[in-house]
Length: 97
Image 1 (tube, rainbow, N blue to C red):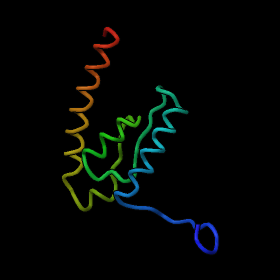
Image 2: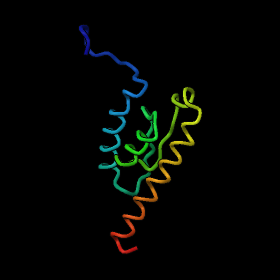
Image 3: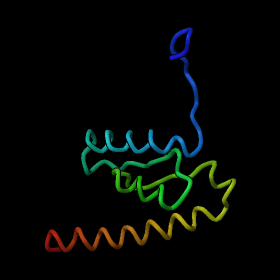
Image 4: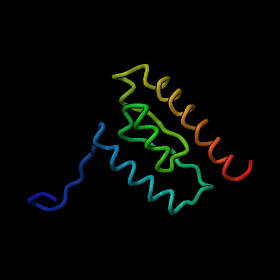
């Protein structure tokens, strides 16, 4: 809120990641495990993308960060593939398959 009441603003950049993670946690709780969720907003590194997966995203979408770092999609892809392999192996081992 401002002095004159609530204001509507747009938020961009890495600061948005905290809001994205919070929204992901809430959405996953409501949607359950069977509804695919794509995270977008504030993802500026492979580590940010992994945080989104840990918060419940099935995939991530990159936007403005790609203009600054054109190799970001390849780096995020590699990191998420590695994360998925580790966590899918863990899930398979824990449920017997």
